[in-house]
Image (cartoon, rainbow, N blue to C red; front, side):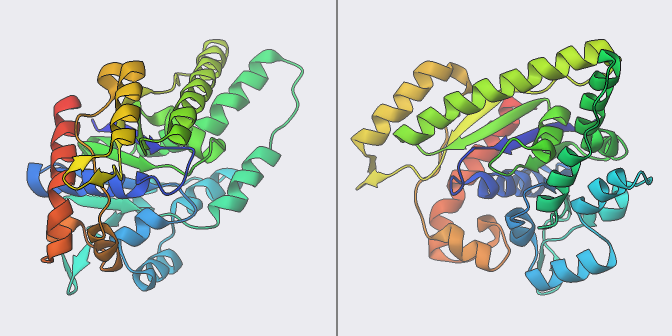
Length: 303
């Protein structure tokens, strides 16, 4: 049975998608794990790290995306998530290069679908009915992933920087959530807000499940990974050292020991829709070891 994790942050540009992608590809490439990446961010960045926009367009037009799952729910139609699993999407010269990794691609249509999910709420006079609807709207992804969970070791869900219903679906199916963060003041504030909001969402899920007979409970905080740590020469700048120590003091063992620094190798790899481990380029090689270590630490924490 797959272990399922959501990777999330309220802020954009904090390495969330890059981290999801490289942990997933490293687990598949180096540890022989079967990994399913699920992109629920309408920006579709994780999808475009796996495949070019042209290949995605063809897959979307002929097969569908994660938006197809939610649209089927809104239309009260059956749907099998296997129909939108993109097998071995990462290619080089037309050949799969990460054979153990599959993808459920995203779609900008998720923006309107989230609004439609919220608009479909119905007023109830009975508490049991309200609780059942609360669970039903947040169990769409959970119910779908049950169909394929036995086929993977890990399912990693890349979430958008919000806590709307599609994001709540991702959290509800996850055993834990991973936060990527810059070691700066705003990230510290954002961590506190995100932690408190998810705790409240979990409490509501637990309460509604108890009333309706559902089984959703929400995820625990599984880890905090620092990204784009700034170096002064070969050492971390004092400002980032202080902030990393402060967050570690607040969250203790949840903070990963490994981290990434700023580097242009990630951008160069994303242009080729390949992980840094598979790029024979000096800039990529300089940063590849960082995600190797993060991937290994992730596996040690969640074997």
